[in-house]
Length: 431
Image (cartoon, rainbow, N blue to C red; front, side):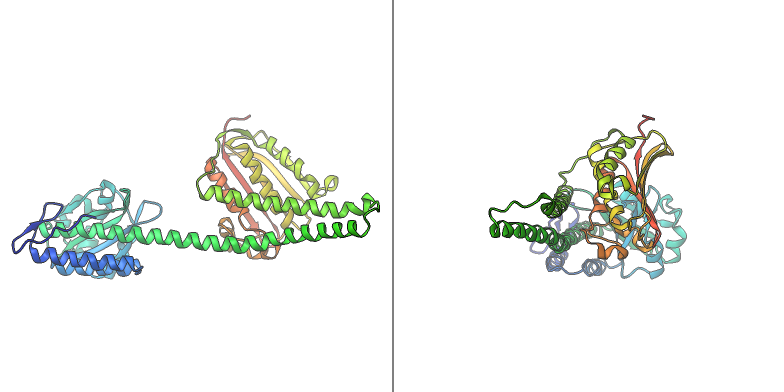
């Protein structure tokens, strides 16, 4: 943030931007900066901080009407942040403003990444699509500056509007400079705090789910191991028939594998969140991967009596990471086994619109329409799947891996009639 100049004994001084400020204005600005910074430090809601900043700047400027617009997540639109003195109709109309070279002062200032001064809205080409909106709300001039974060990325805009055609005074330019910097600190601070709060929430959710999910296989392992140990201690010299040990050992193996899978998912989440997970983009044969994974998982579906069916309609070679695609397909098949109610599961490999695709279709419990986008979130599960256990990270993990490969995953489902998950990769030839 630019520091305000110390006021002299009585005459004018200059701010960092070179603009002349009288001593009383400099003292007032310094006091305002301190008050805004205290609000930010105390965790005041962003809208209250921006509202307070705007009201002070309007009082200090005398003729200006101020607004803050915030860049949305897509980086293509501006959303209303705070503009308490602008007409409600105007605020509603510009909420969601597209960024571009001729989208008013605010859209243009983000597009150019520099101060934009429009002294007469009625005759300026930047406002050609919005001139009626502005004039209809009594706005005749506008100066807008981009709000930047500490890395120089655009966060939004700070604008001074006027009700007569005019440019900003030297004092107004100094106020815009200070306002822009204070708004940047407030917006970046709030976003950082939001990310921290989200990280804490995710951590707490993860620990709660992990403790519950890990408890079952660990308890089973301990109980079975303890039972075998007690039998051995009770009959140290007895030869235990393998047929008696078989079921216990199979249960131990199943729970150990479940535990291994859960821990593996936890490690994958950790690597993804920390940015230590990379994906290759090289030609991979989806039919070959599907044969490998279905062959490996077929015993879990019942072996020779397995309801698992593989259909390869044509060669489908896409760009991706083989090991991670196997992991994604295993995830989808594990879900099909869990939620399929023992009904047939079909894995289909095909091409469509130049893309390589593999789909997994089950005929189980299905997913309600309102859950179908939510299930790809971290630790999210469909309401219909709540009683089936699991971390709720398999689909999130699959989506993240595919995104890193430049692919995607979609779902088509009907409650009570099963689900079809489709993995799509950019095509890499016919194979």
